[in-house]
Image 1 (cartoon, rainbow, N blue to C red):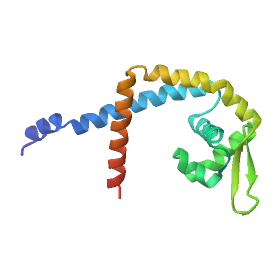
Image 2 (image 1 turned 90 degrees about the vertical axis):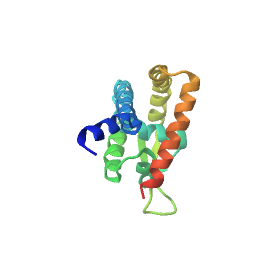
Image 3 (image 1 turned 45 degrees about the horizontal axis):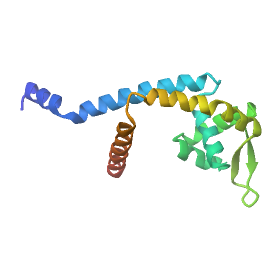
Image 4 (image 1 turned 135 degrees about the vertical axis):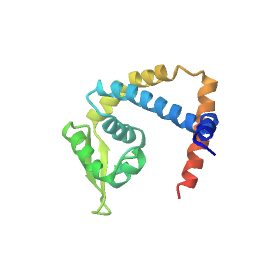
Length: 154
């Protein structure tokens, strides 16, 4: 197969096109969400940690990274920043001194109570490019793709 035939074959294969379109869409959406979060003087990681604690309660520091896809070395830095802002506190585990929990403070809870409704509206506005049915279809298709990709990742 010569280069021209290979190029033609690549252009007809929707896999590469899907990858490019998915990557561009994700980047644009993530940038819009990041801009919204930064209005509250938080970065997306800080917001993710607070949102996790707000919705799921106290979390061991070691588990936060897994839940919000953050490198373990970054957790300490993010928790330190949120602790300085008084949005969370560290709580030692009474049964195991090796474990420390992150706990959202009243100030952190108030912040999320204040900003989450507007943040949710912003996400809805970003996603308004699809109908409700298209959103449900996209969720199912992306879950299927992610599950398959996870299964071949070794």
